[in-house]
Picture 1 (cartoon, rainbow, N blue to C red):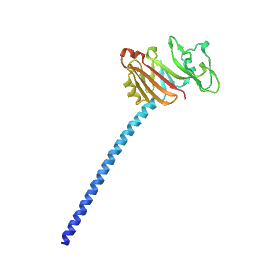
Picture 2: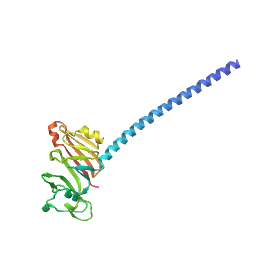
Picture 3: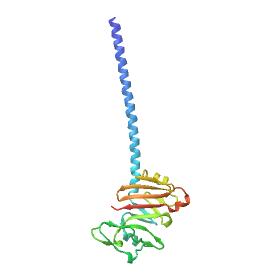
Picture 4: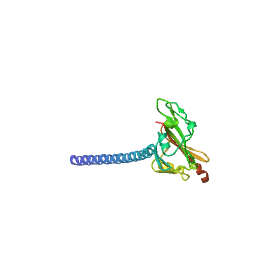
Length: 211
């Protein structure tokens, strides 16, 4: 009888040990799966951050010339742009313009925002370009950061594929605006027509970096 009890007790202990090992193995599998999911999410977030970091290098190519926003107005002037001397007014320190005269080159006008980050007033021609707005109809050739050509073939999906999830996406009946934001004064806004392909010639993009 004692021998039988001894054998039964040993069998019970072996069974309990086996169950414990199985449970531990299951926990390990669960933990590994959780780790894999976490790594996957982190990888997506890292990819998202990387694509937007490209956009926020602010490096563009306008009509074949490289610029990094903000940049000195003198760079535009050196590349053939002209500001009407009669409209080259003073801009107060630490301010930017709304509706100031646009620099022109040949028959092209460039929509800009002048910015004076200094402690004294300066002429527009002595300031910086803090914002550029380009629409396809203006016939400027614009290459955005990451070698992304902006033209009438640009779609909402092509922007999202290139630069990832935006700060804001506003879908209207005929167009969509896509806004990326690095800072309150550092934003990129796309205006893309979506209803009629013929209207895509009015696609536009605005880059503002006042830092």
